[in-house]
Amino acid sequence: MPFTIQDFLKKKKEGRKITMLTAYDYPSARIVDEAGLDAILVGDSLGMVVQGLENTLPVTMDEMIYHTKMVARAVKNAMVIGDMPFMSYQVSLPEAVQNAGRFLKEAGASAVKMEGGAEVAEHIRALTKSDIPVMAHIGLTPQSVHRIGGYKVQGKTEQAAKKLIEDAHIIEDAGAFSLLLEAIPMNLAKRITEELSIPTIGIGAGPHCDGQILVLHDVIGLFERFVPKFVKQYANMKDDILKSVKLYREEIEKGIFPSEEQSFK
Image 1: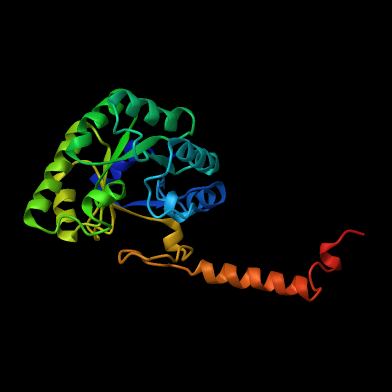
Image 2: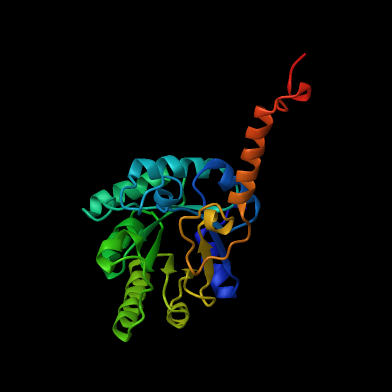
């Protein structure tokens, strides 16, 4: 059975962890879905992971729709969540609703994710009124990389922590069905998780969140430009693929491939 928003809320109520990963294309989404994860985020992190960009800012709505379509096409059970890219919702509420609606109408997603705290509360309200479920995202928000001065842990001072706690409550009141917490101290994440009735999803926010998410390419060792402290690598696919491709090249050069077995008679 497909995972739904009601399942998100039920898992928090029952104290069961929510499992999430990113995916950006059909084959990877099929694997994540087959592995039994609850939800897949088609993150604008694809800008860095699969497009080779320095940050997520240049990623467009059309690119997000393109990738989300591929993921949704592959999935049978996991919830698919589309990530609202930079400047797809900041300009106006009508534009935010229209762009978010594209994820559901064109791409086959069930919900969208939006970065920001109190400043996007009205956006969250506008989307939920239009029957577009919203996962909010606070802490380290990559679209704000220039304002916050890089990819740094957030909420470390008392004032910053207080602001994140306030944002979390405002977001819940605005109607978000869950809240992603990125790169914040684990005790702060624990407090936010305990105070909210909606589930929290952590990425670099410690073990006390209601669920966890990582970038698939980090988990399988396929992205080597940098590995954040909060990532645990469960495989080293980059080395395995490199060995395979080198062997393929060598066998062509030596006349080993293709053999009669790979040829028609």
